[in-house]
Length: 158
Image 1 (cartoon, rainbow, N blue to C red):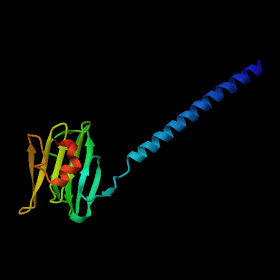
Image 2: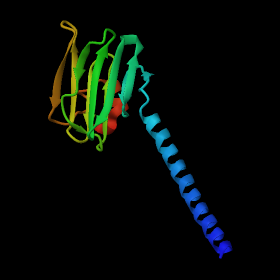
Image 3: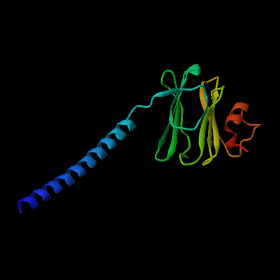
Image 4: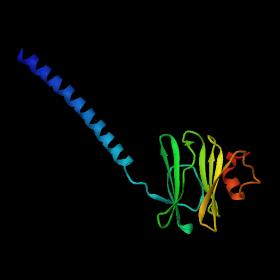
């Protein structure tokens, strides 16, 4: 009888050890995943142009940083100067599951392109150094947008 109880005890211990190993591996993997998600976003060097992914993009030549994030399935963005002043920020709710892009052109105008809500742009007023937001209710075409914006984002235009 003692032999059977020792065998059962060993069997139970092996089962418990196996479960503990699996649990340990699972929780360690979860910990690594959480730690990697919590890292601060590093700024990416950027020369203006098209962006289709969230992140923090720094434009050295103009001393501007464009921050893009996804919050509650919406694209959020802001443009900050070298002193940390917020020059512009999200005006419309762009669904992050739809096709979208932002494009900063050579005149520091920010083009907002969205298959969800349509297109718009922030034009920099050089006299006041502020940005003026304009929604475009009709389709953009090549005659309205700068050539470089059109060539790099033509999939948003007709």
